[in-house]
Length: 503
Image 1 (cartoon, rainbow, N blue to C red):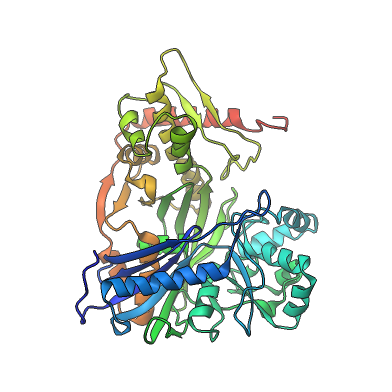
Image 2: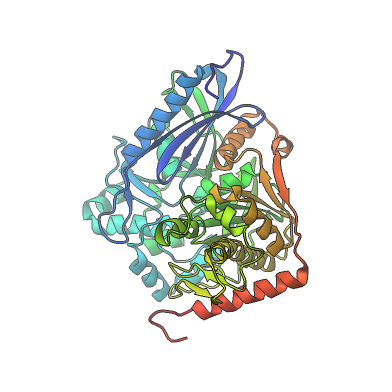
């Protein structure tokens, strides 16, 4: 893994800037991982519901791992064809254009402090236009309200923003600005489409929304294609061009080679992020899915529908840490396989409410169908099954909204290594589930965007390089599948409005 490279070998360097760590990964021309470096950075929680990062710490760790991965692998700048960047989306940085210094801590995508601003947008009648123009909803998840909050709460920042002294960016823009030593202030369409300020039909900043959120349009980065040229950096020992930028979930969709309408990927992490490629026109959702830009390549824009499941791997952690039913997350598969079925037990892990397509913040977790014959294996199995059920909820909704039948589901993330879960997922979806050989799909997507932007690889080669490790085919009888899924939907209905609101 860390052998010295021959001086002739060439690589693409992916910078994968995540919520808890910064990583740098070297890929070869076949899309194989050659070396990885990773470093965590601090999380700040100044008040309940607030989550912050220090943008300077993000930059320092990202630069450090980029240098480290090249040094460890004996790679010279001449061997790096291009850099691709992928990032935690929606996290908001404001910095001084001249000094390059952040003017406050970054507000992280998980931060909920702008909920009141979102309610105000709805009260002002902006929500419908916002939904139509951006494909998003008025929610504190997105960056636009975070910028407004910072400017509203710091009059000096508002004055400097109006004077054109400050720059706003998501983490990709911040890294590009620092890598190019202040020469380039730009983002790509996938990240821009997550700000509440970008019109996904016209593919430009929306002046009406900038006014509604009181964000000076002069603060915003220039928007480029996802595999455009984003400048060069000389901070890694020589000149290297930056040729690819995409938000993490869109990068994973690209890394999974979901290049055609109807292809979808699911990342099974703490929660699940599902994206389905819907073609070259945005598809509005009737069920609270997000319509987002997947990427833009050489002037051709692709769109996606996105849905999220709040609790996935977190349910397995709950079995381990909360109920102490398992010692390690991977044990869940062993115990689940000890019983032929869950014996009618359903676990609904609505610990923080329910997202798509139910959208009930008042729902709470519950276990249904317990009998004297229920043992821990049934509860563990039902918890794993719940992850597949929730994914099915979202994908059924996507197929309805898009009018597109799912051709296959490509999977990545920690829980994608669980064979029991993947087989049950195939049974519930009644479609093939495909697990790739390279599971670093987010970083791979960034690397391949850069490789296509530089002209090192044609886009078609991405599909050819994508390698299947294992496919799971539906095996369950359709009637049994229907009965089990109907039972799940009934269990979900019983959890809804569990706290504080009448049914």
